[in-house]
Image 1: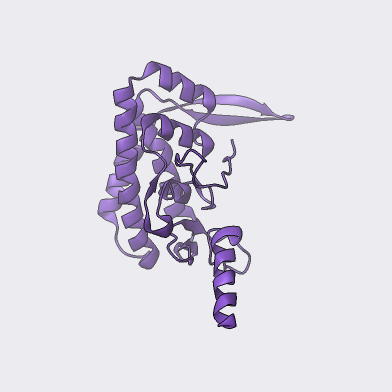
Image 2: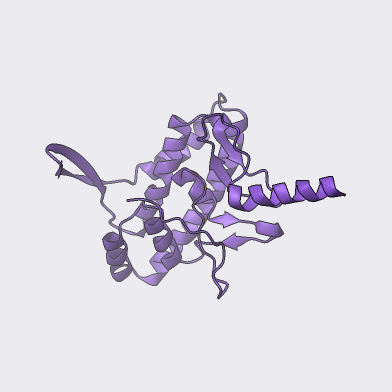
Length: 210
């Protein structure tokens, strides 16, 4: 499944929409809370919004999401969203430290992350891909508490597979978005060239005019 890119932060009705500009699901998860112009925009403020984001991020398929929505009580889904928001801020604080000092001993953080990962159960399926056969693992989502594994997994992948120096914050004024710099020269500064990058160019042009 691929993440669904959403270009606008707010719909005409004013409801928050997620942004997929991070280049990594862990950073897209951090970006579910962002602060354009000094204001906070929360995109997983409810259980249903959390399920919708997991689907849009490619971490949960639509069939499983619909099944969970039918089976679980609203209270359980709301609790799962609240736990995800709490985990998001814990992960944000840790990744700030990890990015600045990746070689430190993060035993407590790893222990906390591993406790979440230990919730995971899955089943395996042999599938045909063209003429080849491969084994595909599917998460077994028994309850709302297992949804946290879907975002903890990308955080684990980020700290074990990516370079800390390439995990960056947008250089745009008042932008709080994170991204993974996958450019060849590793000189990316902005979450989006069309948004923050363009605003920076306009500001620089006006400064030169003055």
